[in-house]
Length: 87
Image (cartoon, rainbow, N blue to C red; front, side, top):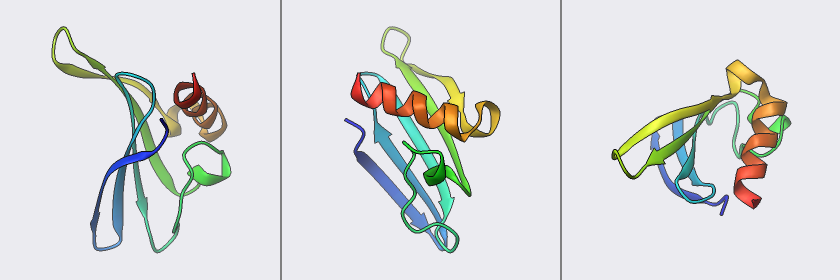
């Protein structure tokens, strides 16, 4: 858990998906000219990044939005992501 499971790079924009706990995923977008190796599990690692946590609802086959770093802050987001990755 907590490891990158998919990624994509288009020029300098990079996207990563991390598997957290069952049915929870973290999406991370960043400009790799500003941030080379972001760590979504630390406040400092989220600087210059956009990150979201989604939950997959198997019953209805859809994703629901759980948290976004720019809404709850990097520290709270990193704490939540770490908790979901290690729970």
